Amino acid sequence: MAYKKSDELHYFDLYPKVFRIGRETEIHIRPLGGREVIKPNAEIRLEICGLDGGDPDDFPASAYFRYTTAKANEKGKLTFFWTFPEEQEYFIRLVDENNRTYLQFSVFAVNDDLVGRYPFIGDLHMHTTLSDGSQVPDVVAANYRQYGYDFTVISDHRRYYPSLRAIRAYKDVPIEMTIVPGEEVHMPDVNGVHNDVHIVNFGGEYSINQLVESTAVGEVGKALETRAIRTENVPDVMTQEDWADLIEAKAAELSVPEKVDKIPAAMCKWVFDEIKKANGLGIFPHPRWRNNVNHVPNALCDWLFENHVFDAFEVLGGENYYEQNGFQTAMYYEYAAKGLRYPVVGSTDSHSSYESNANAFICETIVFAPENERAALIDAVKGFYSVAVDTISKEFRLVGERRFVEYGCFLLKNYFPLHDELCYEEGRLMKQYVTGSPAEREEAAATLSAIHGRVERLRKKYFAF
Image (cartoon, rainbow, N blue to C red; front, side, top):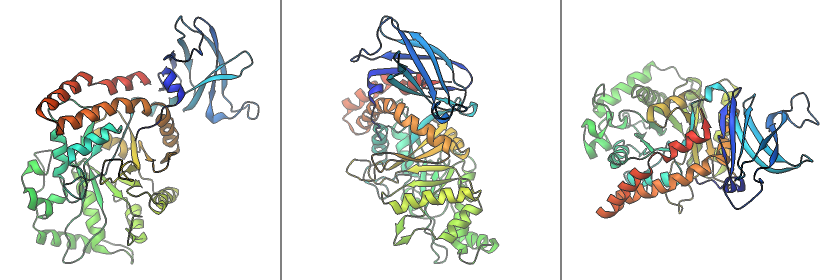
């Protein structure tokens, strides 16, 4: 999702935008041309105020309003030093002699646990032509990079190998997008008993679908290169008979409430446990998707939450009607109030990566991780360093823990519009590389090499870690 740039981002460059609390930070405000608001060589009065403390006229005990001055250089650039005391958004205002604001900028100070954690935005659930989507895996990845995603996964129904295709498509060119292996898991019936709970394996080092003889095994076989990114400790492929015996034995051991069906519950638990063994992130998606009726019964939802069966809750994604994301958001906060705390993610569950699909950009996730890498992203989500973003309406909404909602909102307005501009060109070149003529491929590869590292440099500029 490309976020609109405010006038301040068009006309001025403020850096860094994010920094540690309690440490003196050097702040720069540089005009970008077109508005000579900061007069060269002038002494400028600055007002620095924290948003969380209230207005000093009304709440003097908590308000944070401080003043300083900085002298502009011959090009109108300001540089000053400040120590920000608490985690929150701050306004830096340029004020006249009557304390009237004529320019305002936002910055954000973070607690120590977020220092070294950068915001990466992406998707944890989407589809391609290799299940029920509309574009091939490598094109889907390129399209979403063009729209600003730092990471994505191809999570086709019943198939892991499409995600490997997307990864391998770009193995010979440098890109700053991380394409994570994955799949949407649908296991075979157990002696006629069906489990319709969808499960996303994000980043697992081997396929869960292909642990049983089924659709994907029939299409590409049992070779490890079709079903794993590691070569050791990958379970063998079971027959459907062995699978049924396994789940029936697991179900017999389960103690579940009266309204919970044992076979689906046992299948869910086995799949999520296996994703953990594969070092993946097991995501519980769209329980309030209206597929005839609500997709997952309340009783089974309660059991999954209360027993901490899964790793992360896809609180947003899939459809644009309120009953899905709205009800799932209510579920998340209600369970949290009961002490059932879960990491959250938002995903498109996209089946087409073009604007003609009304659901192509409805939701995404910001993950706060040390690096844009599969294991780091998974560890960050499991550690509760993520926030889900709803972009169905013109005004985005965020769901998650309050500090990350506030921080994420700041980033969507003040950082990601600049970030997305760089992603667009890389995504366009990625698509040219996988769909173009030999000459176009060669040109794309050369240009990708030339621009590689721009997004990382942008992060280092705006995050003073």
